[in-house]
Image 1 (cartoon, one colour):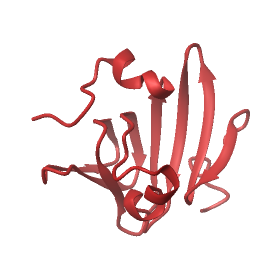
Image 2 (cartoon, helix red, strand yellow):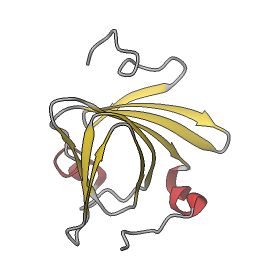
Image 3 (cartoon, one colour):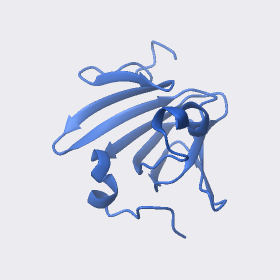
Image 4 (spheres, one colour):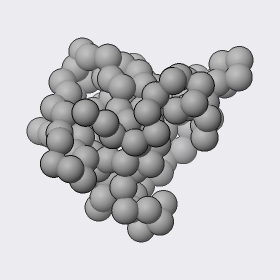
Length: 128
């Protein structure tokens, strides 16, 4: 990651950690959180997170803004989403996802930890 690019640099005042190769910055905001996730090129949830998390798919909802890069989301029913910055995202639980191309994907996300689906009125699984 390029140290002079503020979109990729650790955020001041945030709780910073690396999880499965993803640079994660988290800031509390009222009863929720704002997260900035930098997914490196080559990242795939099923490859880098599945064993660590212990589920077949990512079971979190993601609501926010893709600020840089491209990601592909795929559900078990074969449905997929191709997302490219700049774009608002609303990703339902029960998906795999990966970075497309040679550029990191930067996602700014708003969540309520385990209550995100309920608090944001999202479906608890992928629906057509």
